[in-house]
Image (tube, rainbow, N blue to C red; front, side, top):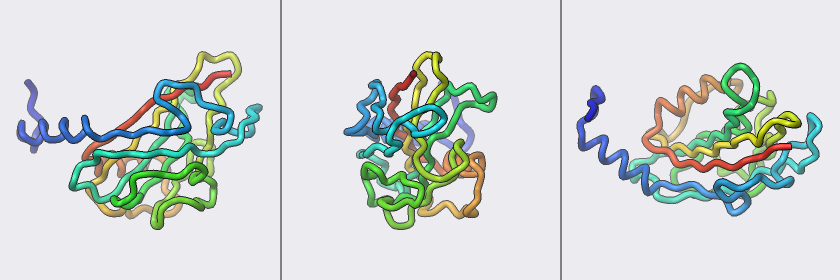
Length: 183
């Protein structure tokens, strides 16, 4: 048994229960599957369509005030902890899905108020998988965070590190799945 300062055992048990019923899935990318060309990046030698997948979730904690999404490849050989393919935050608490294609650079199709942060590609919006040729298939971790705040107050040009720090600092639960892609 361990103790976390500021949290009683009941709070830890409640968080565990909330997380176990909080789920994230995609009709376009089943968990543990290979990502299709439709979602693959179109550039850097990849010839995909670069369309963000539809995502849906359920079971968020009752006290969720907003959501944030991060799609990350921890296997990318960047030297700085992987490659971030999509960040969306300020997704309203009454939303339970993102439609296919919502990750276009202009954010058309995102829920009102949602914001896309700059990815490792240097632009906002979905940037699909495009690992180096010959690498083993990379893992693409889709993680949705339930947040305790309605809105993250961040500058328009906020770095990935600043956005991620604020997401993690306000998370009350998270749901995730992993898919793969290699070439």
